[in-house]
Image 1 (cartoon, rainbow, N blue to C red):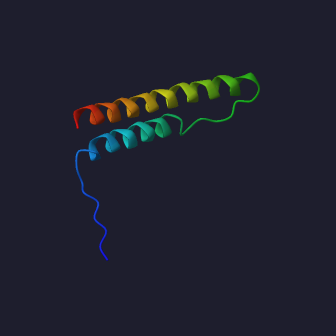
Image 2 (spheres, rainbow, N blue to C red):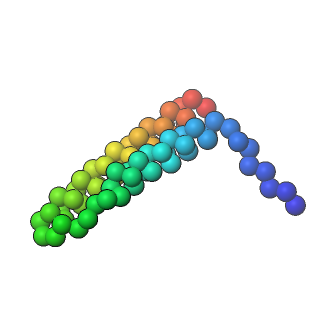
Length: 68
């Protein structure tokens, strides 16, 4: 039995997605809990940068979907 996965142009948005989330992880790798209200700000900053990575990923997949 053979299973074949055709490699096509979907690799490009996948690479953009992986790069975006690796960037997000690298950006927050040294975050330390600050305690108190600082945790709220730190959480909001992580959420905002995660949202940016998600938007970049979704734009890449949208371009791929419209191009095919």
